[in-house]
Length: 321
Ligand code: G3P
Ligand code: CA
Picture (cartoon, helix red, strand yellow):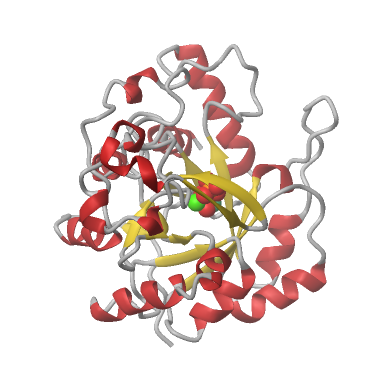
């Protein structure tokens, strides 16, 4: 059987740039992905949502409010609306009420300007990007880079009669990237969505699991029937007590590996580090040291990949192992 495409590091895990190098530039822009590769990322992660005309664009939310200048466009003022997303009402400017041509008139903005002034300095500079354009860019690179698209809110689109699984599968098929060996891994928080797309493509597939608490063996056995990866909130590996202090690690990495499942972990970033809040400026050498310590906690357990807003730090920690 053909071996699936995987970057290898000996030792150490694969470094996934979470939403691009999103600690440094506005997330999910081509510029943030390019910087991630320059900083040594092996994988770039586009979260994907659908436009009105069925195009896949890189955004984390189905609404455009927090990460674009849509509110500065009076021509779109009547597009604000309230819809149910994952069972809860959400008010905003929904990407699926805009054509791709309209979305191309918007510019990206930093979601957390107080935390990331470096990134916020680029507000208004960069366009939003389609997954197709990201794949065009990847094809120009000398060194192969994996893209790890996440299908966001599949049930929301299904309720509207749209299928994010079919949109993604069609694009991968058109580009000859729907194969087992393709440098495209697929992820979702919705297990059913992964079962759906597994019928359409042969790529590596992973389930994102949020929250904390033990994941029972019965669930792992079920996942191992279809999936290649489980992708975990850090708390699933190092639980925290009520005061936020680290507890002993769980045995989830070992139990997943025994079943042939890779383990990815998220998210390594300034705002939810296990480390003290005083270490939040990555320009400060002490801060860098502490971020590296956090990566090493997980690397020592044998995790297969980490998602980080700071791929350079993830690489530096790997080199130190
Ligand atoms: O996809 C896993 C990781 O990206 C964490 O989820 O919410 O940042 O898309 P989120
Ligand atoms: Ca994601």
